[in-house]
Length: 496
Image (cartoon, rainbow, N blue to C red; front, side, top):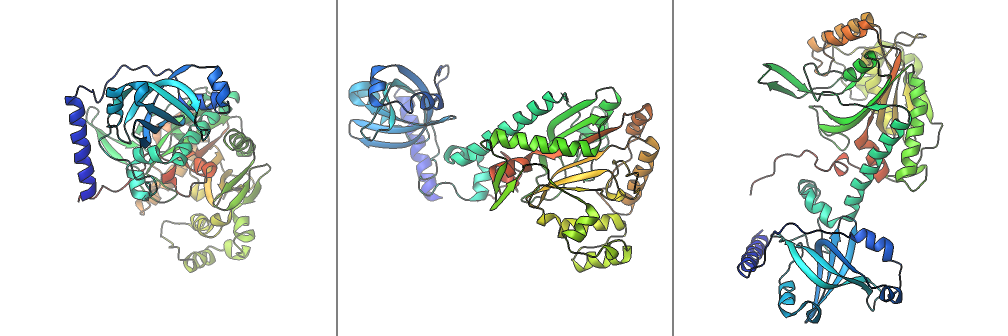
């Protein structure tokens, strides 16, 4: 820490001296017509002779990442959003006074440079600087080159530094952007309309989760950060929009883990005159397109030591069948509520008084089966108790027409044929209220306005939610959700 403070003082003193000498530290108004990535793409394969035959001046800007000085000549590496390029400054090219200024620059400073491209004796593409300007003075040193920024907590807390020094991290967020763009393009081609629904809601609905709560002074009411946009999107189905989707944030006041962040990005889409089985096929198609867009045209993904194939069709199980075929449990025990309680307790899973047979089956599945589902797998027919917004299965009214998608041992998507009978929906909400009164903080609230919307008539429909952060994890081989969120939540920084 003392060494860092010394460097900070030295840099600040150097900056103040530059200002006294008439060098602006933070000028503005510089036009930068060229970008390093474009130069590398266009000229990266050209020979020294070809560059000499086509002399042209370029102006780029970037951050100094490395400096090698040899008396009256200096090599630097500049980094911009598209890549890194070597630049070459010579005293006889820029002048004695300007070269003296160049010698006072530090790693981390941001420059504008102009000049022509050439190749060095080691064949590295390089820009011969004719003119340069300091655009931003860096007062803090970047991490040392060979040790880098490796402490995970510091990397996430100081993501801006992480992005500067770690190219693989920058690539994660480029892929994230391509994934989101590809999703939008896919759904637009399928006739879905992108919409926006409230982030602050008087009743938190659309999922079973603990919400964040706030207070609106002007309205004088409590509001909740949304846990899901579902009930508002289905109101739009009532209003006549037959295919809608939203890509936006959800907020859940729950734990933080390698798979969970309190603030996360979700895709939710709803299609009238469709069933959950239609969405299975749509989901296979969507993931296939994402793989082709961001995975080099391959339907196979390498994830944490597993080779995962996204080629359809994917494996499908009913939830109770998966407990038998994947979990190795006897069907007779799973259909007996008392034996199910004993199974749950033997696995170290509590059986709360508000948890019925269906919820216990789901808890056993989460513990025993979910981690084993590495290849894409649809699990369907979830118990009615854990699916308050899903349509009952006509063949078995104790379960619902619902599926969850699992890849690499974690949930990626949740979908179901929508419940559009307002009478049944009111009964489901009432059961959720009873569960909440019995101690279940994640149980659903009663939403009278949503029931009123259903009473006007919602067409038969199916809807799905996909966790974008987990999708990005899959396609970037990230082990933690914190790696794919630019600024994940953390505990307050300790004061020293």
